[in-house]
Each structure stands twice: as structure tokens, then as C-alpha cells.
Image 1 (cartoon, rainbow, N blue to C red):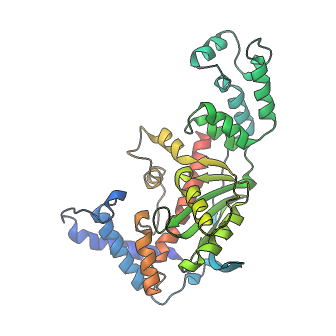
Image 2: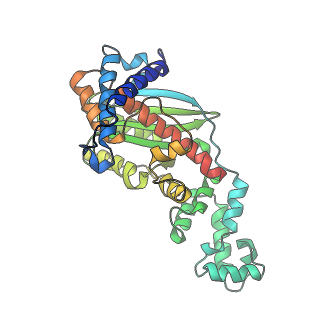
Length: 350
């Protein structure tokens, strides 16, 4: 990075916060983005930030602040931003993961909490103990064989057949997952389904660092090459980590690829952390929005804006050719990926 954003971020934050002080007692009004829980004061603050960004970055280029390269494929070009963050992920211990799976008797058809309790009294604590049981032995042996194949996607399907997606047993599969396949994914778009994607972010662990790659569309025509680049970067069978990705990000990616007539060939093991966050923090936090969870974990963003304003900031960039409004979009996406990486370790440890 040619120029550090830290000094600029501090200066912008001081300007915006100073301006907010002047109308702390202004009456709340309905925000144009009210359906997204964006208050009018947050909207005002974001608009001030955008104004400061336009002044601060006037005449400057993204390449001055980020390591980047123009990537080209058969459909055109887009800008690839590259970050390397000191952060080592812990996916848990494989042996502990196996023990948790073998100890869950309710994975067998016909065994519920009451039957499991009776089996425990009789000394059947694990599936191995049940392997010679006259009633449950055949099922137990089949499941033990499944575990031995180390097919994480298959095992995830077996768990979700009997348990909700928020069940902690699903997190134990991280311990059986190869770090080399892990891909953390998040996208930013101009709205809900049917609207273009403007930024696609992916992170992967690399030793004691987190490598982040973002594919930015500098204009709408670059959406197709950016989609193709992220699809190739994710791979066909990744161990995918998202936050509400089952309902949004992956469906959105598939919809945009389909719009251009491209096949959706990604068949991931999918760890969606949102249900686990709801379960983990339901008694501690008012909601499970990533921003709320992030504050609880003590993480702080230098430059950020509400995700609802991504279309507004991006359109301002298109209208002015000033890269300033792109900065918080890039930083928002980058820090979402970092937060998910921290959450993986947090959940696996707990």
C-alpha cells in the first residue's frame, strides 16, 4: 500500500464526529432507508462522511492506497485488490471433532433425548459402543463408516437431517476441514436480487495471515468479468464460510451468473455463521447483525458506512469519477471478511 489509510481515517472520523455534535438534539426523522434499520442520524453521519471523502480523495486513485492489479479474462477486466492481515485461524482439533460426532447418539434414526438417556444408563456412550447392539448396531456401523470417509459435506448433511443449522455439532466439522479449502465470502451489491454486484470479496488462511482478494467493478460493465474471477477463486468444492450466505450471498451469486448465461458450478461445504451467532449471542446481544457481533468482540472499523448505503455511495462514485465513496465500500467488505475469520476461531474455541 503506497499510502496508509489510518491517518486519513482518523482525520475523517474527527471531522464527521465534530459535525455531528452540532445537531445532537435535532429531532429524529424517518430515514430514506428506514426499512433497513438505518436511523436518520446514521444517514446524516454517512452523508457527511461521503462529503469528506469526496474532498479528501479528489484527484486520487485507488492504486495509491491499495495493492492492486487489473485482471483480465475472456469477458473483460476488473480491479483486484489484495490485502494480507496478520490473523491465524483455529479450526479446532480433529480428534475432538471426531469424539463429538461419535458421542452424538441422536444421529441415529429412532433415537431421541429419552432413548439416548436410557442408553447412557446402560453404558452405551458412543456409536462405537452401539456397534454390536441388536437394534442399533447396523445403523451405528454404517454411520461409523461414514465418519471414516472424512466427507465433510456428507457429514454436514447427516447432521442437518436431525438437527437445526444452528446446532453446535455443525461447528465441530471445522476441525475436520482442510484449511487449504477454506474460503470466506461476502459481496456488495446495488440492491436486492436483480441488481448488479459491485464488489466480491474472498479471504483464505495462509499460515499466520489472512489473505484477502476483492474484485471491484469500476463500472457496471465489469460485473461479468468480476463474477467469473470470484467463481474461479472460490473453486468448485470449497469449504465456504458466509454470514447469511445460504439465504443471500450464494443465491445472489448464482442469480447473477445465471443472468449472464454462465453455469453455477460451485458445490461447497457451506458454513453459514449467522444461525450460530444467533444461538451463541441470543442472551447477550439485542440482535445478530454482524456489526453488533463485531462490537461485542471488540473489533473496530476505521472507515465504515451502513451497508444499506452501498448503492448511494457507488452511484456517487459513478457520477463524479471520485474514488472517495468507494473507500468505505471496500473497507466494509474487507472488515466483514476479517470479522468472519475471527468468528470462526471464536466459535471453534467455544
